[in-house]
Image (cartoon, rainbow over all chains, first blue to last red; front, side, top):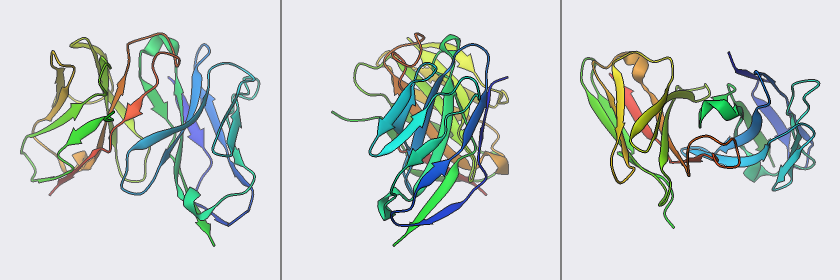
Amino acid sequence: GDSVTQMEGPVTLSEEAFLTINCTYTATGYPSLFWYVQYPGEGLQLLLKATKADDKGSNKGFEATYRKETTSFHLEKGSVQVSDSAVYFCALLRETSGSRLTFGEGTQLTVNP
Amino acid sequence: DAGVTQSPTHLIKTRGQHVTLRCSPISGHKSVSWYQQVLGQGPQFIFQYYEKEERGRGNFPDRFSARQFPNYSSELNVNALLLGDSALYLCASSPQYGGGAFYNEQFFGPGTRLTVL
């Protein structure tokens, strides 16, 4: 079945540091890939997405590139801020599965001033 | 425009009881999905409904059921609650069913925090 694996967390960085959160997936066909963010006490917000190989999703300084050859979708940001502290989830959607998202276990990011 | 709304925000129940959670999708969205998020884990898919019909079911026991109403709102019901049902229950709406990410971007509500004692 489909699965998403994220790097083990939590991750603690200082403000302005470079961020990478690794995500790899297993799925048949050509899934779409997503990064969601969850702030404390809130639901999930879509951060960025990519729908085909070599697509780069970007939003709010975050980027991720869909790498089919390595089945990866790593999240990066060049300079993190305290306000980026949240839990980040990688997810996939297969076109044949309707709206069923498969999520990774999440990575807690804490950014210290 | 209002986003996805869920009620109640928090709920405390005891083992063996029944619970009903409610979700109102974004206006114009016809598909509603339910997810369970246990503390420290990623959301797990429970159900998807589109045009009042069940279109997908995750690996959850029959104690979990759901329905969608003519106005596209939805209820999730859980019977005979267990301690392990304690979780954040998330509802997501999307414009339609199928068609990949372009047509199926999921918009999540704030969730209902269920605690089973």
